[in-house]
Length: 308
Image 1 (cartoon, helix red, strand yellow):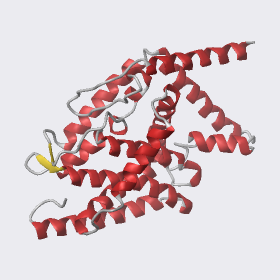
Image 2 (cartoon, rainbow, N blue to C red; image 1 turned 60 degrees about the vertical axis):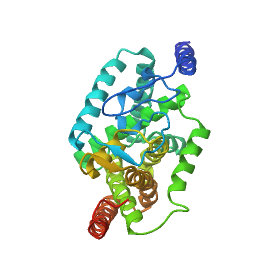
Image 3 (cartoon, one colour; image 1 turned 90 degrees about the vertical axis):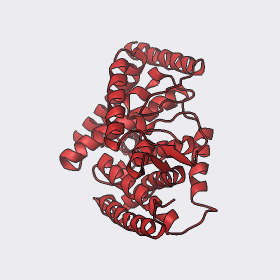
Image 4 (tube, one colour; image 1 turned 45 degrees about the vertical axis):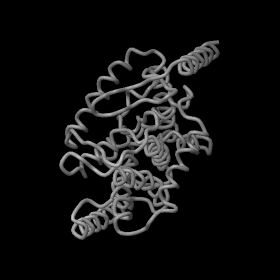
């Protein structure tokens, strides 16, 4: 009877979240990041994750982007915004219910293998939920795993409230694919892709602890959200890249878009490289970053400006 009551409570909560999400919309005019989702409310969970992984409505890319803040100021602003949102989220019963459910699932999937019960269904669920995140890679892996689990929880919340659909995912993937097809392939186009991809490989290995197949789900989720950020041209990661490559308060929008395309593609590459395990993605990320940076400097010297 207690189990039936708990199940009914969770079902009712999810139904309320879906109805609330469908009946509301959100806009954000923050100075540092434009967060949110057209269908997910602020209470639905985007407030607990870094703004770099959330997106706003699609916008048309301008030729240049005005940059008013340094990379450090952008990161600081996004962190302050996320901390404030997290505090607000602690007062939301629906959000706490989702987070609590995820925590119980992770706890169970950690304890069961430890006591010798690890059949195929447990292994499959552990893979899908990134339950082993934070259990490898030492202290950096523990911290990265916690952040990765937060990312997984955020993604699950969006799925629950209807903030992500199969159609929107496919649209984002098509947008990413378009960045790699039909364009001009020269040093100026390739270098920002390499820089973005190298950075993503570093982040993926940090989140996964050790880049194994069992831990690759965090890379899949990061890829999907990064692709959405690319399609919507918003988020903290885009603003950080814009601040890094800005000159005299301006940066070429196409450059930032290419770096973001490499960022999304880097997570997909990280999932593939997980076959080799260990810290392969750190090594590959370092190589891509160095090559991309050298090519960027070369192009800049040849053109007398920032590569586009």
